[in-house]
Length: 283
Image (cartoon, rainbow, N blue to C red; front, side, top):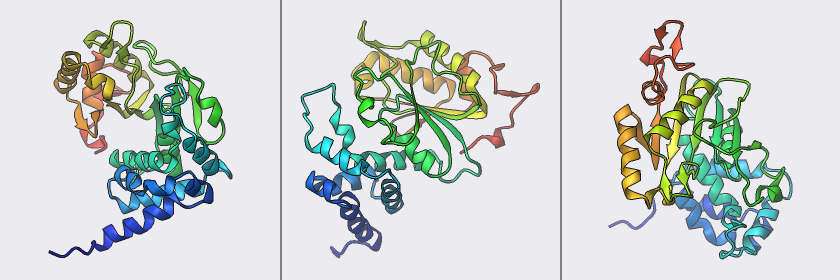
């Protein structure tokens, strides 16, 4: 059996150490040792690695060094700091991979995107880097984002997602709403997930912000996966309305959104009195 790496795989192993060790501060922080983490986040995709390196090189001066220093001094026991999110190359690579999986490198127009529970804003950063207009919303419960204000150059606002107010008025119709590993649908006071009634309220409110062929991605996370009966009920509801399993979550296109919002008259779902043609839906 030939043990020589393929040309593509060899290129990946050349790129990954160069990416994570691209500045002295990152190397001192030990990030050069996380080349395999970057490869895993990029799913062994050479294009993702190259895009990650490009995005990192375009960040403001000193950002890579600052994040490397935070990551080096991290205290994993301090839940308020969330220092794992300072592992810049890994999270940028993962965001690029997410954008690619959603087809954002292939669309024929630039999209308006809102990322719920955006965290540090890596996904909007990846979207902006290829010409889309993205905004991130999150509740800064621990005031972590104050420490990176201006470091990740995105449009970020503080917002608490609720079933009746999932997002503010952005001033324009939104083409894609994403929520990767969100916690807003976990109810901490009763240790459970939203039921059908709250999901329908959520989508009824959300579709008012969408463009005619707008899409929504809702991810699962470790908290939701620990609530087996409630999670299965949520999955059954999403399957029933026609949402498609995607990555580690669910992708809702026009028909699924109309069904889950409870009305075919949802804003953006109709063009005059005629339903938007299915051929206009993005793949």
